Length: 540
Image 1 (cartoon, rainbow, N blue to C red):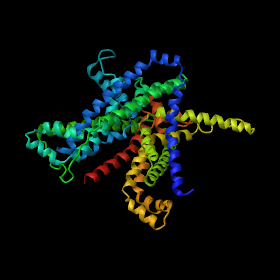
Image 2 (image 1 turned 30 degrees about the vertical axis):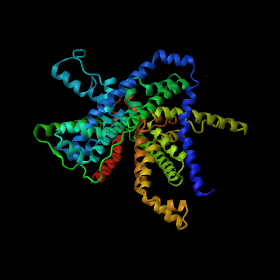
Image 3 (image 1 turned 120 degrees about the horizontal axis):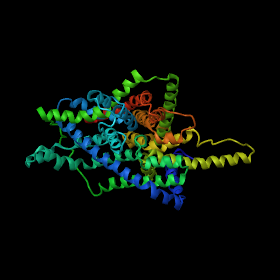
C-alpha cells in the first residue's frame, strides 16, 4: 500500500471516529421507552426547553448589543483609549463562563463585599432590602454575555475593517448622516459576519454546563448529566442529547439559510476605511465608557477578585495543586497533540485526494465543536463500554478473569472525546497554514521523484511550523477549560484544575476555588494574545 492510499484510509478512519459518538447517541435514544418519554414530557422537558430558549435569546441580544457597537467604535472612530481597548475587549475570551460565575457570586452574594458594605452603611439587616439574585436565569444570561460577546466583536470588527471606504463616501454624498450610514450601509454589509459570531456564541451557550448548573438553572445540558448519573437512565439521557443535537443542527441551518442567495461584494481596488471619525467631548467619553465597561466587567473585575483571593485569603495545598496542574497540563498536551496529528492527516488527505467523501469528513469535523461536551461524553462512553465488555468476554474465553474496563474507565475515553470536540479547531488552523503553500511546490517535488511522505517531512512541515504550533496551543487551552466531558469521563480519583475549581465552588468554597481558576485564566490568555497579534498583522 503506497503513502497516498494509507493517507486516504487514515482519513476515512478519522471520519468513523468523528461519526461514531453522534450515531451512538441517536441510536441509543431509540431505546428510550414510552414511559421515559412520557415522564420527561410531564416533568422537566418544558423547563429544559424554555430555559434553553430564554438563555439563547438573552445571550443573542446581549452579545449583539455589546459586540457590534464596540466593534464599530474601535474600527471606525478615534477616541481616548481606543488603541488599548482594541485588544482589551478580547480578554474575556480567556475567562471560562463558570469561573466568572463563581467570582460574581462571591462578589454579589449576601456575604459578599457589596451587600456587606450596603448593610454597614444603612444598618439594614436580612430581609430589609431587595438585592438582585445572581444565582438565577438572568444571572446566567449576564455571565454568558460577558464572556461570549467577543465572538460577535471579533467577527463584526473584521467585517467593518474589510468594508470599502467607497461605500461610506457614496452614502455621505447622498446626504446620509453617520448614524444613518451605519444602519443603512455598514450594518447590512457586516450582517453575515455578525450572524456567524452570534451563532458561535449560542453554540457555546447550549454547550455550557458549569454556569447553569452552579446557578441552578435547568437546561438540556444539566438535564442530560442529571439523567445519566442521577437517574442512571442512559437511554433517556441520549434522548435529551438528541433533542439538544436538534437545537444545534437548527442553529447551523438558520445560520446558513440566512446567507442563502445573499452575496456581498466589495471592490478590492478601492482603499479600506482608514479615515477615522474623531469623537470629542461627551461623545468621546461615552465611546470610551461603552468599550471599557465590557472589558472591566468581563475580565478586569473578576480577574482582580481571583488574584486577591489567591494571594491573601486562599490557603493553598501546594502538593495537591501541583498534582492538579500536572494532570491538567499533560492531559491537555496529549489531547492537543492527538488533535493536531488527526487534523494534519485529514487536511493533507484533502489536499492530495480531491474526493467528496474527504471533503464531507472535513465538514463533519466542524459539527464536533458545535456539540456540547455532555453529548460527546455519552456518545463516546456507550461504544467504549460495549467494546470493553467484548474484551472481557474474550479474555474470559482465554481463561483470564477480572481485567476490568480497559478503555471506558481511563483517560483513553477522555482523549477520544477531546479529539471529537476540538478536531475542528485544529483542522481550521492547519488548513489555513496548508492553503498558504502553493500547489506548484507539490508538483515540483513530485517531478523530482519525491514521495508524499518526503514532501511532507522536508517541505510542508517546516513551512507550517507556526500554524501547527498555534493549533496545538488553541486546543491545549480549550481542553484546559473543558468541564462537562471531563466531569463525565474522567477516571476515578482523577482531577484537573477545572474539575477541582468546579467541585470547590459547588461546595461553596469560592476562595479555595480561586487559585485553580486563576491559573486557567492566565493560561487562557495566551491564545487570545495570539489572536490579537494575528489581527494586528492582518490590519497592518
